[in-house]
View 1 (cartoon, rainbow, N blue to C red):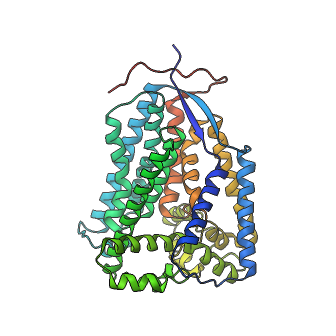
View 2 (cartoon, rainbow, N blue to C red; view 1 turned 45 degrees about the horizontal axis):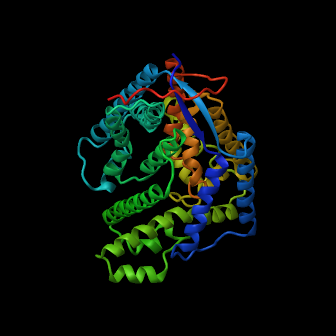
Length: 440
């Protein structure tokens, strides 16, 4: 009997890139923000040049103009074994990560004060234990894909819902413990790409409306977290919309500030605050890039942002200066987004940044092509790079701690996928076999 098959829909990386660009332009037009441009003509030219090189890399790496579909033959028994292994290792990593942060770094003293928790985990701790916890817990980002893969092949199990909930606990821990939203954004992005790739998410009018409502809820939630975090810093959240680091180049308009000042407690004002705060975070990076490009003529961080985690591991083993301190000293304005291209400009300088733009674009396109050719071991990296593409104009998620841990964890996960032999390459497409009934 032939093994069941699953159809994979490989979105064109160019399509994802331009979708992200379209959202960015729409928000830039609609957001009530008074942007401050502090770059020059050369900085704008450099930004356009980097994007063109990135697009060229995507096209050359993928070698296709449109999205494509491919069928893979699934070994259900081995796939279940892989899912169980990923879930167990990821859960163990999450437990280790929670233990390390709560008991080793914070001494078991945690509170609802995000700032206090952040200060506690910024000192002390065990480098090796933290590394193990962060790498293994990153496995949970990829768990939904393999669950969706079995469902795409027609095998549905109720315990999958529990595993999906477990996979969500990793980013929720960051939100609850230190008020960080980046891990949750990364999880949702990888989750969405996983659902689209396996065909479980197909857009129609109803799902688009539902997605918009969910986006509004998530934006409101993110704004609420930011509001609480700002108050804990002793700052006025409304005033911070013009004075905080992210607001220097993207301050909220006076009209918005006046309305929020007089209508602090209404539901509409809460939604407006969250929407404007989200827009500021989403849009300010490009103006930050213009500023740094106008004031940076050479490399200043020398690859320490792009290779932050490997460099940190090396210094913890062999000794050396603190990587975080070196990075902070090499940037003009720490703690702000500078689009995807800002960190590589800092790392490699204007010319090296151009090479890096083309390289990362080519690598992203190549990963899409490899998965299209049924090389399933590359799926984790494909998911990460695909999920980061919509944020090219916002932030470089490759240089964030969570993003790099996810990338590094994809390497041992690739070996695990290969050892499980969950698929068999199909040389010729066959009719998809429908399993009889639903499994529970």
